[in-house]
Image (cartoon, rainbow, N blue to C red; front, side, top):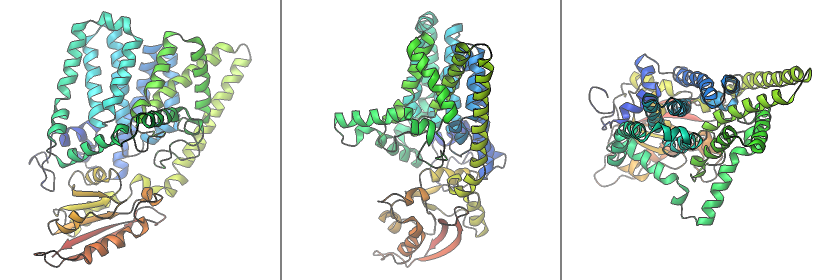
Length: 488
């Protein structure tokens, strides 16, 4: 792609096809020879560790180093953060860049530093490139910082503010142009997804939109989400503990209750962040109840609340009670962490291996072994699997046509795709429980039958369907991936 300006399949590669993989770190991993699932998990883990370090800076800017160290410790063991420091999706990178933008903005305002303002602008722009939800969430969060530090913002001055904004605007020019022109097929698909996500896009009345917004927004404070079970997506929660965790969440609620009563400038800022981070998710129509990816900034916010809770326990306890109170909290955090980590990295990984995208690292080798690696690909799979096909083939493969495995193969892909062609069919466990989706356990047989028994149109040649390989998506073997070679 870097030498020809095209994807491996010959499709035009827009500028975002270069920039986003470079920003999220996965292109570097591919250049270094990484192509397996563990290789790409290292990127998320690396940014996850960096984010823990950022919390120390964040806490110092807001209050003092105690807040920073305590919140960093909380984030390091929080299930919410651990999930996204492990799975392939660049949520960890998005969180890192967003926090870096906030910390840089706070430092820029305190020091009246244009340089730090530029760092904030660059980081904010990077978060938008990596995850489109940042188009809403990042400005809202940075706006909360400006409101919190309004006197500093006024002292920062119009010229410095204009300079930082200009840098940010210039950095977003490629993003805006590529989305407006949409010369790259993947960008065009992303536009369709982005524009269709808003709650205002689905014919709802104003009252219905308001109701859905409030329900989605409030779900992030729901005890079921925070303390008990977490996100409904099994890739982002083990379902046995909340996204924050029972112990961290209870201590965090102590901090919230004290802050609501006390209402200092610092308290009000944390309350503003808590109210702000769910807004971007609440404005979306699908899967907006406690979506831990769209609201991932909440992991850092809850880490701060835990730190506030610990500081308040310290302030209100005296004598021998204080060491005993901290011993109880520490023991409870350690116990929760050990139980969570033991299950999540052990039995849970085996029971739900499919959510960690097993098998994708074998696809290129299977195609190359049969000399089909240059053949155009149709991918019939779940959400975001086109990205995984690219990542796990070191960017040597890209599907020219994609469709969700929730639905049957589209008519146009059956009739008008040029031959020969590789068809990759991946049964998706996530769609198995959706009533209106195609039966996932029969998806491969259904697709093979549709490709084999297709009534020919005038001028079409007879087709042949060869099975290249078939493998299970997880150790349970309930759902499979098949690769077919379709030719005349």
